[in-house]
Image (tube, rainbow, N blue to C red):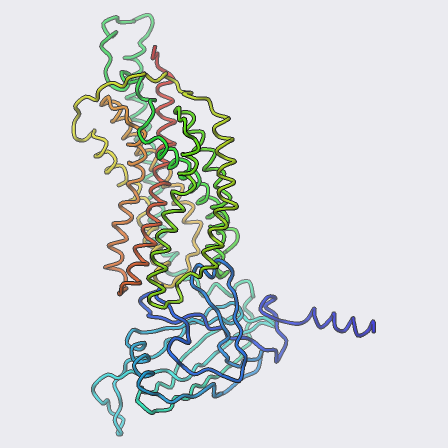
Length: 585
């Protein structure tokens, strides 16, 4: 009995499967089919069975869960029924056959005309194949028949490279095109060829990374150009502000030995509004919620990029959405602390309202857009529709993890902050705003404030959009982290200059102006997304258009809050600093 136990234990140890990525010779390798859809519409995907193609009825089909992240990205893996064994070659094996009727021809012809492609997974490695092609039918003498006709590929040729007991590389080619004609029998076949390789298992995903695209000289040059712009901008801002502020300080404070009493009562510029500059901004609850959410998104972006750099999450299906969801829930504590602290500092009395607004503002917008897109996907009967279970899991994350952490953070933030803790005591009554030049108007400054930050991330937006909408794996998170740092520095520098112009025009509404000046970067990104849609993609149809602009709207709203908060943080430090060193009394 002991011997039997040891044998069984040994068999369990050496048994191979997808979880260990190790197989024994002759062991079954499952070919999973994921989705099928128009090539030019990445989000318009359907189940493979939606076209009514034949399946191997003798085999019980399995389903594989991709976790919450896989469900959110529309991945639903099921066993294709293709019989495959490790290191066992197969030649022209018949998979199934079917006779074409009018319904089949209509669906399949439409799929061919829309350039349908499909995705499969073997040992967690993705592989793609084209469904069919429009070709000119050939006559009996081999010449072209003239008009184009829909052909469907009926043969799949798998070439699989392996190293010892592990699958390293998969190539799929399709062939044997057959014209779609009523009554014609389609016989689907496949071949499998196993080839040994010395390539390491840890490098097997490298072939999916388009290094020629992402690591092109233009990409390096754009980042270098952005770095040089940051250096120049920081130097310029420092030089201007140091000289200007030094002049202002000498005029306002003076030298005690050379004090000029003529300056008393003749104050102009930013010194004059010291009693109003720290007054409560309008829509305080909304502003505090935006600032808290911005801190949260800034923290989420930092850790998300850092985790992606360390963990290579691009190679794990559904891992990035899961990581972002969990990190967002955890960083809700940051939102509560910063939002509650800001609200208390400016004398807010209804902290519960502010906390509730912080809890529902960003998640509520995201959920609303997702529900609308989900309804469109359901109408299309698309696989991209998120299941009710997945939506309920996301709501559970928000309700039982994000919200309690937000509440805890708000309590801590407001209790650790003193009310009206500013360098200058706010006046009870605000000064009337003077007439100003058009270029110092808050709206003008807000619109102009986003130009340079957008210019610093413009090239990276091209790479990010191309990877997300054009079937590329984005993996250069080191570039992304550097660009994120550049965006922070440029946004802070630009908004400080805008705020100085605003204060010097005796306009004390710097909080919203700084936030909108930084947040306007998102507006330029959205305009670029519109340009990208019409000039860099071939997307069409209501569903794909709705998904493109829906996801883009969510991204730009998050970027608006993020850059607006970054602008406020830098500007707040600047404003507190300059008013701390003046004799405001």
